[in-house]
Image (cartoon, rainbow, N blue to C red):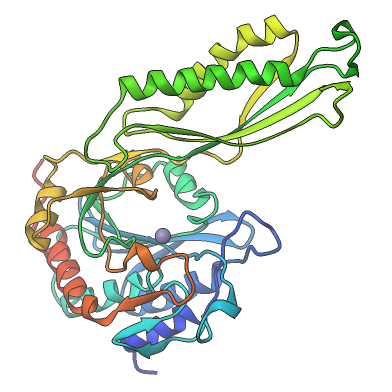
Length: 385
Ligand SMILES: [Zn+2]
């Protein structure tokens, strides 16, 4: 069978659903996507390793060439869920119209992989002095468990990693982190006619919210990065549930909030600080206060403006590296020793939406850019030690 064309690969990936979702009823395996990619990359002479992250969930690391340096081209193999009724055509069937390829994952971001393959194919006759690694992760859209498992395994990856999330082909070297946390207060319910009959979780929650708002003010005074359109860290009190009747002392109350730390703010340290500040409130109100993450947090990311990869990408694209408002797996790749950058062909404005697409005009410049990166890190480069 002849090797599939760029468009055939694109269509096959779109036609192979790999939704990841925190709601188990919508969550799907990504194994079929991993097998498609491993099949193509194996045919091209890549050594393919699968890492099982959870039942039905896999990362793929496909490597060509050996050595300590080299380049990682990375993306996630999953997509968000989709509302089929809101699409103008079948989301799982590639449709070409308006100089675009429409389909689920075309922009975010299964469509990145055929572009990598297109970039590398003409180079395969040449010796790879440093390795090219193509990484496809699972569950980026739900828990980032794939990237987390890869980081936990701890095997060093190449010298530079480019993550092809939709940035409109502009290099991105910073984003904020995402934490979603839940505070539960357990007091004691009782008849409202006498406060001594209970311990109000709602009264305690009012104090907790005051403390969180005070912390927010402190963090916003301490941390600021003008690269971001919202230059400070944010903390949003999202929802609260507690109590039932006006004549009962509220025994239980829960609050959920989202915290978006800037690069340099460590989620574990932030959580420790919040706990420290809530402890005296628990004593004062004689209630139990628990803080726990709703999801494992996604760390903030910053690659220094001075890094080689940033310079190279700025030169190749003609754009200064910037900051974005969405999160990626970049910080996990940095943990494995790579310089990291987010740079991909799609537009974030159409991601996670019906009629997601990739502009056909982006294909050729993306392939050219990826080919230059591969040349630089894998063909020309002998690793300086
Ligand atoms: Zn994405």
